[in-house]
Amino acid sequence: MARFPDNEIISLVSKAPRFDLAESVGPSVRLSELIDMAFGDDADFSLDYGTAAGNMELRRQIANENGVDADEVVVTVGGMHALFLIAFTLCQAGEEAIVAEPVFPLARNALTAVGALTRALPLGFDTGYRIDLDALRKLLSPKTKVVSLTSPQNPSGVAVPAQTLREIVAMLAEHAPEAWLMVDETYREAAYGHDTAAPSSARLGPKVISVASLSKCHGSAGLRIGWAITRDAALRQALVTAKFSTVISCSPVDEALALAVLRQRDRIIGERRKLLAQNLQLVENWMSRHPAYVEWVRPDAGALCCVRLKREVFDAAAVERFYAALARYSTRVAPGAWFGDDPLVFRLGFGLPTLTALAIALECVSVAMTEATRIDGR
Image (tube, rainbow, N blue to C red):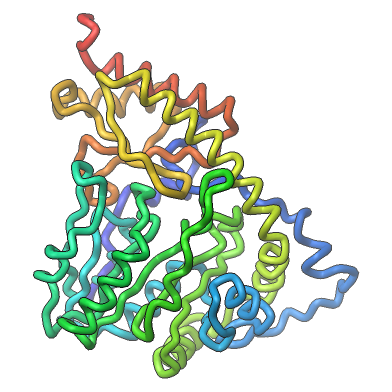
């Protein structure tokens, strides 16, 4: 029987250090911002089961924001629940799933836990984490059931262009007609400032599944509300049945609060986009001051990016000293190893701290790099 492998990324839900640049979220919404809109004066809100598909008004709101019908939306207990239900429903033991890597490890684990054989589609720092369509084509086989992508990607924040997604849909139709394209779009709306968010992939084709949640862009990870969108009625019903068979329904309290979040979407996301733009500029300025130590791939969206320690400066021992120094300064970044990336790479999360706190945290990273190396002759 398959098991979920251990990964140090679980430390993100433990006690945080003073400066947490490993996180990939933004500031959390406060319950006081939602309670009146969610419940009003209704102290008699009934704590019944919810529906297996999810609250209809919530599904309508999600559908409106993704350009689909409410009947194409299944509400889940967070985005990870959606990923697991899709894997459980579509993959039999021994069938293949192609996963673009590096990747949020739980997304891969959902597939391996149901017995799927995962085949890695490598995305590299040196190529800007862009998808190589020829490499993907070579991985496809009659056993391919799922191609799993994230856009914007975690850990890099690099988006998959809409044209690339359309080409992948056409490629699957020709070379692997039984395969489904699953796109995790949890960071899609985390654009910077006045940038326009990418369109949802949900309407790209009948064998495309879009997954997202309220965790990243909406500041509501604690609500544990996500969703899967599919135009295929049979798959939708299978997902509803799988949800009912695992959790029965989502919490109606969470669903009511989630609806309040989406009804305040423009304010909530707008505030976070402004912060992301300011913080990204600070990160960009910091990178420009340390070309001897680090390089990066600038993200397209999201509260995260990939930074690489310079290979000619950091050997394995220096990398260890770098992380040890960060710990002394109560500062954390997310090691690339969490995601299957090069040990020289780390994920830098810049969406959670205030501008002032981020500046201090980046200074701690600067000091840690200096202490870990002898580049300054020390």
